[in-house]
Length: 121
Image (cartoon, rainbow, N blue to C red; front, side, top):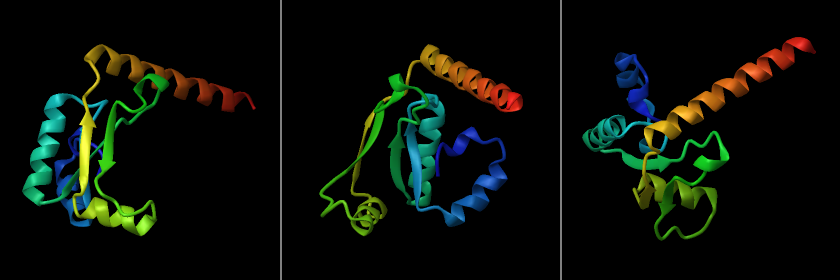
């Protein structure tokens, strides 16, 4: 489940947890506070923690990574087993506030550009 506390409907979050195997506890585009809340949720639910850059621009790629520890191969089943068994290491950190704002602004600009481009076709 990506960034669980970015959603506003916490009732829906509790319902979704029935179907979740992994929780993203470190997302580069989310505040430290919301990532911390996600860490507590993962521990409380006894779910594997993962992380991700959530890159929307090139300067965000690889900011946070989930590294598989001792995974036997890159076979889909082995990767799934490693993830579900918690055989992962999360490295990285959140982006500073000003870079999160910049990334959000770029994303909004891209969406508006594509929307206006499609309307002209």
